[in-house]
Image 1 (cartoon, rainbow, N blue to C red):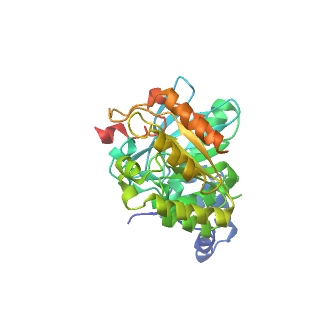
Image 2 (image 1 turned 60 degrees about the horizontal axis):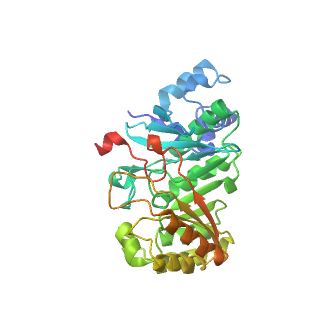
Image 3 (image 1 turned 90 degrees about the vertical axis):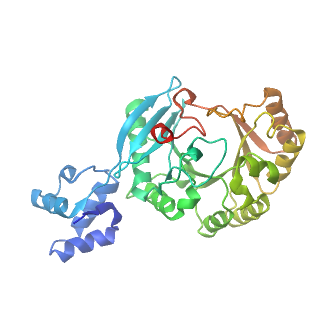
Length: 347
């Protein structure tokens, strides 16, 4: 009989498991602390439990902890982890260090449900959603790397890895709840950013659920025709619906949104593209990150001329919109924005 993954149990269910066996309920709390706060990989690590208790847990449960399959380090210090899941599938996550902080970029799906033409992950079929503990484990792995290599805890988390987080909403929210809880990592939700390609219904649900983390939208064009060409799902979720959901987001949360925007030569580098972004950015308070494009082998997408990027930035600044130019990290190890993809699967 297959053993149940013990991390699928809530604290109350763990307590109930022990009381049903005639033991004290606080044993459940001890085990829960080992699983989440102390990040135990196996039952033998739970040293404040008796040998008999650990054997009993081993007989009834498993801990489907992720394993690091491969680590690559960029010349700029960025670290990419190939993470092996319990069923043999792989995802990738990234540690991005700066002088003042370390950021974890984590995945939410194996592959991706969307079909963005410029993204390596989109070339993979979506195989499944990640479970809350698998997302949590990615963060713990990178937190440990931050402690070892940079002598401080992880500073920030971005859901910008493989997959569309809002198409795995329940599990992503559950993982964030665990990351921010005192029983987990105790991290402030203000240090977490969820990046979505734009699922209007789910953006509205997030607002209604009163989430406390930050929202980023992978925009790349504010003209439907152009956006649909590079992000075909836009035909189902057009900019008008996205704009409505963002108005709802701001009305409910009073939190700015960040727009992630790549400029490509011959794709979205016209004056009309710039004007459309300026207009879209006025819908609610926001900031815009202009992101350096990372080549993934498709000659339809080439980095725009620096003069065009400067035109974008000057137009946004003239209209009082905060804009930053983001230089990519980890490009030499395919760890930069849009490059994450398990190469074995692609081949």
